[in-house]
Amino acid sequence: MSFPSNRIQLVNVKVPASFVLQSEGLQEGTVDDCLHVNLLVENQQVTAVHPHSQVLADTQIIDAQGNIVLPKFTEVHVHLDKCHSIGRMKDVGGDLVAAIQEQAKDKTHWTEQDIRQRAEKGLQELYQAGCQAVRTHLDWSDGYTPPDTWHTMLTLASEWQHKMQVQCAPLIDISLFQDLAKADPMVARIAQDKAVLGAFVLGHDNLELCLANLFELAKKYNVDVDFHVDEGMDPALNGIEVMADALLASQYQGHVLCGHVCNLMNYEQARLNVLMDKLAKCNVSICALPSTNLYLQGRLAGTPDRRGITRIRELKNYGINVAIGTDNVCDAFCPIGRHDPLNSLALGVVTAHLDPPFDQWLDCITTNASKAIGLSPTFLDGAAVDKLLMTNAKNTAELIAGGIATPRCLASVLTVATNNQEKY
Image 1 (tube, rainbow, N blue to C red):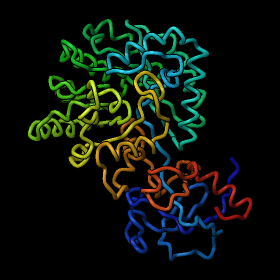
Image 2: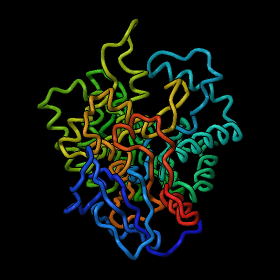
Image 3: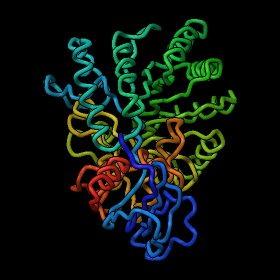
Image 4: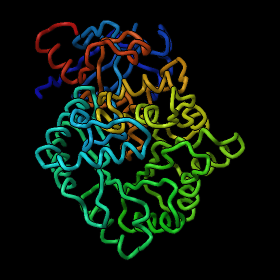
């Protein structure tokens, strides 16, 4: 992308306050939970954030017209091998087990061409939504060798690196880690492929041994870890507690992300506090997944009376890193949806009562989401403009509600504006 190297001042910008590290002196003209500022851009980088009243004389001025600038989104949890398969299914409906069974039937269609076509559609949706990075989970085989789809998705991830970072995480049954020697070459392969070590934990036997072996191998091969854990509302589920104890005992120092954790709705406050203390000590991130968990969890003969969501507010208030992900899109696990972190956050707002000001929740799909998958978070101070978005939303509620134009990469906006001498 051709980009001018001269000094540009983007004026009349709104920025959610949590995305500016050095906000002293910028409170003048604050609107809702946004700072009203001007951005100095030099050599494709934001080098200063000024109060909106401070206009520099020796710069090219571009008027942002009160639009919001924020970091690009990070999608922490999707299933690109399953997405957009709903059209060929006949018996969708039911709980998690029913979804697993119906999706398994669909695998007869999973040729390389089929996976490529559906996954690329999902990747394109994520890119158009304003994502800079995505982690996709991929079904693993019943044994220790990767399925044919593994190579296809790794190839796609490589092909997309110039647009968006794509992390692949296998969805491995935790019981495969009962035998350390057999699991070792599997994890070695995952590390060789520069992937994330993913596993699902749901009421398994010998869980302490399996998790101890998993963390031993994660340390040995220096891979990050991602769990589907306690994706259910059975009060007997305690995988997240066993995982936290195993992690503390292992002294593993990599990034650990736990998705779902729906069972926390059963915890009384004292038990929840003990767990959250452990999660905070070992720096675990938690990912809430509203769409799929609302669709599958709490199933009754009629209308469900429980919400399939983890304790977002309590976890975040305790200081635990919380992200919100999209999970399944148009498959047996969720027959509708779209790959769009803003849409997932909006669903989280309604489901978990995430009240305004929304500045405190946008980090769940940006800075905190990046940290959850082992990436450095982007703040406006010093950010490269190709890591930022501009939207035509005038406040954060409007941004999350949708109905606005597709967010645009700030680098592209500035290139067009400087070449055409036009306002955005």
